[in-house]
Image (cartoon, rainbow, N blue to C red; front, side, top):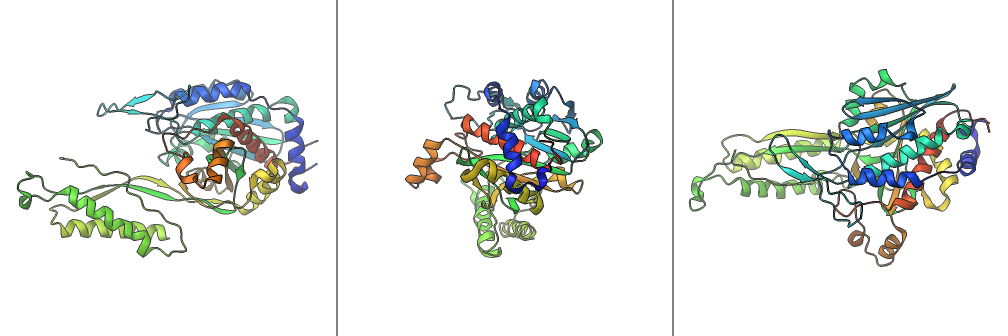
Length: 413
């Protein structure tokens, strides 16, 4: 039978329920990756761990794509080509979860010798583990009898800087593996574990990050009239920038402008926001009498993530059948950012990203009951964020498998 025409994803659910999953070995894999995080562009050990896993031993494995990227291909007869993606880089954050397997890793910058703590504070360790477990299950001899086509599982570096997907594409990814018909991905988020959420259209926001350098004039604090204080200038700039979203963006449009840090040194509406930001900074510098104009260096650029309607409709049917009341087909747009779309749009293919929850049930339910979600629930990029292993892993693995089966063409049941 053709699962693509099977109503309500019942055939996908049948396969998911028919063949058991073994999550036990992947708990240790998760703990290993969580306790050994690596920053963007430095994911060598993580990539080696992935490539050595028995989970992808049946696949043709390609390494060092776009840096430390890994892509593995499993051909199983004629049919569509589906790409499942997981990101694998960590963040410069000191972990405060108190877990027995908490990260104690640090990174020393070879350029300036500075050392920073490193943590998987965005769930990429869970993404990798789920994809490894899904890869093994989909490659099982009995499961392979239910689908036809080509499966690509891709482990992407450097997502946090917004350039890992493009780096893999530009390094010849699609000369190494087949061009997929559909790209699929998921992200763990701070809501109830066991739940899955998706939406048609815009799923995740675009984002641009800039480093702005302001040039003052140094001097002694007792002689302020001879100085151009860059700290005061920067403070004025920060306050003025906060007015852009409030006064220059249509209130019906979603936008966030954040100043992440200030450092003093001795040495669409998106476009509208960027223009306003530059205008304000330049005028503040002019008003302060700066002798040099400010400089703007773009350090990150994330594309808008817009889920394809057709792909999302198919996933909704399957996820509703597999997860029942734990599935939300119309979740809200996230102001987070992602670069997974580059894997698809670079070759003109559709894609879909969905979310899985990672917060333990008791903690989530208590926060909801007390109306303290903002206060009590750890969020991505925070020192306390670490998904509860189960049921997060089970949900993520089944979601990936259901998504793959939904799009892998004919299945002989």
